[in-house]
Image (cartoon, rainbow, N blue to C red; front, side):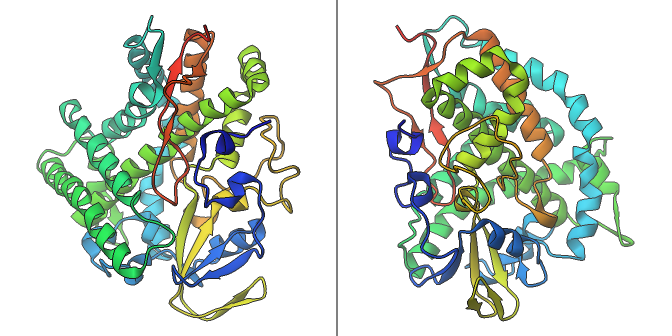
Length: 399
């Protein structure tokens, strides 16, 4: 059976999507001047050692250590600050909070699908997969509904700027592309900074209000803390949840036998989402910086080197997953790394899973059939470290 990657030509340089194995689980890329971590146990080792593999990547990037971009961003924070920050914000994603959000997410999902009811075809991404997570996170941050389209535009611009990055680019090209990416990022941060200032003037009992009142080792969170946390949640929700929904529907289109089975047994939906995260990992890679010389898988890494942990490749490691090239929604156990591992395990993972479950069930309820349009093939997120659908035109009937 032809896989989605083969059928649609997804990222030919991502060899793991095309049934090929890395020569070594850890390899140095001279062009990128970085170490690639492809193996599952090696990825877990790196993600579990924040003292050796730091998340504070900014010092190795063109923007340097500018706190306006990094302070408060959990993804770029190491212990002990990470532990304290995560403790403060984790209440926004507790099981109870996520469960309480489900009625609103269900209503919003049906509201979005009402707009395409009765149509013979529609684009899944623009109709549902993009607006759903952006709206949910924007509501958590009390961003006015009239402004939410701005965030979708800015994040789309950022993703497509990153799409110009190639694994073959030299440092000069990467810096140029980085600056292009930062233009919409700066607009988003400016908006969030003004929004935070307004929330300080008129504090409410919402997420930002609680962060404004929070105590971090006797200190209040700065505007940078709050703005960068909001940025992180928006980008993570946009990338992970959006692509999870799109990738899952794309997989079902490629494996119609499993599509028929899950439609008949909705208890399989959670397993379907986990296998989709493994098979087409939306965040294909994450980044670390070595803090000292270290050996892993027989390779000697020096201090202050970039490390790229390829979730997508690790999730196809045959040492961890039997028949990794087979899409199997009943796979159990399925310790996929799509949401990360260790102290940076995705804080919004439970929310993403719930949004995916609600979205898939609503699609199954409303559309007895959903198939790709041979005349309008899907397009894909261009970033070389992401794997996901950018557009996904669907027909509601195969005839």
